[in-house]
Image (cartoon, one colour):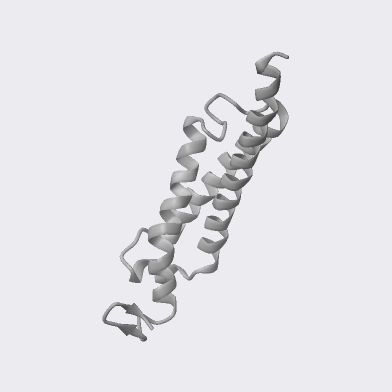
Length: 122
């Protein structure tokens, strides 16, 4: 049996899993951004809520195109695939929001760090 016939279904499954995980991450970022108040973003010294909504909304749009291309053609190449230029940029934008902005905005939304010990929250 030809090796290519063995690898193609595995490769397609990996790209499909990556596309779903990336789209889920991007969707989580935009939904979380919508949930927080605009003044919480300014209170933490981060960019405005509209900036992060545009960035994460664009990431969801690119992620949707990436997911569609993976479902329809296999998505193993091109700018809009999960591992393409725009697909990776969308994942990075959502990841930056979730790793940097979300904890700060979440903490500001609770009124600051009331229960902070010397090494973190209690």
